[in-house]
Length: 137
Image (cartoon, rainbow, N blue to C red; front, side, top):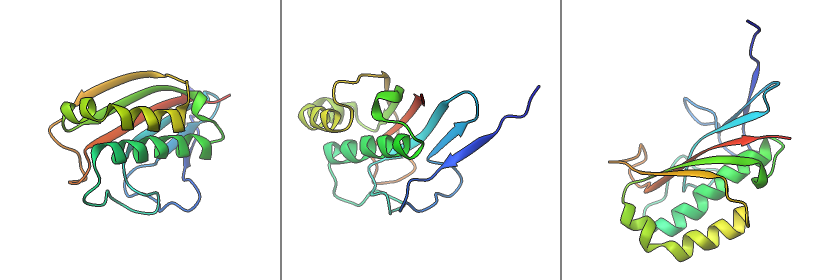
């Protein structure tokens, strides 16, 4: 079995996270696994209090795309999204904001997606977390 070499991805200007990488590029496979991204600003460690679900969704999706770009790809390289929400009703009620954010960050690109309701997320203020995979050209 050969050694697997990988490189952590840290977008310019972002603080290095504790205990994980925002993204990892594996040499040879061109598969990028993107850790769960929440609706925090890139230079912060958490979600600021008071942001609604739509605002958090927009930031989380933007953070996913930023990691893909930092790895040398684009939004069109995303192949899968796994979305964790604390309230499914939030997802249903913020359809317009979700659609606007999708249009801004992904355009008409629609990777495979899973949506799951969870009891809570690590950040107490987070209501959505998006994990992703991309295949880089």
